[in-house]
Length: 307
Image (cartoon, rainbow, N blue to C red):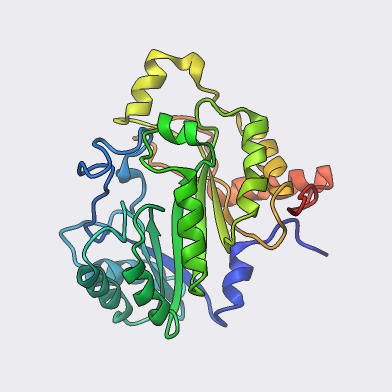
């Protein structure tokens, strides 16, 4: 039976013949949209507390965080190997030697077989790409860009601090070095209609991305967006779970079929989440997507039109 979509676990099995788990790291980086280079206050939706498990604390070294994460997972899967996931803030935003030191510290930890590096499209200098190009000859490297939207007016509204053209440039420069490249988008950002969101899928399909994460818009306590919602709720459309499932399926059907889909939703801590609160774990949501795709006869790429 042909799978309904191209999933991340199958993708990883093409690189590893053993079980692999990502371990999130907070390596102490900041963001040009917070420190004043691009702006202050960050993206309107962002509260980085939503990203990291308990062991991710900047007072701990990269090595310590990885070892604690490894202990957590090894209880159930003693033979598992790990990808060090540099997740919090902008993990290419520092001097080259500082970045090299952090990455190589991670790779020195037993059981770590590669890196996943989360960053912004406007924070990938060529000297870092030169280094990563050499490093990926020896280990698994995946660079993941926060794209969020292909619509520049949306990017301005959420105070993203970069344009979609910068995303296109960064992705092309990264993949031209033979480096695996992923993207992250948020579905349901204010001002974007169902049609605009689905059209985004065709636009992203033009890029040489290997992987893509989809997340629902979440309103998080302590963010500027939460305040905007409180003052102007009419400007937001918060999806009910079944409505969002159909949006995801419409989106996936317009994506090229060889783009790997890592996830469809994000889970923020309950104490920080304002809405939507669906009460579903990631795997439960994914099971619902698969069931609904089967009911609709839907599959990835069904409506994709190559350019």
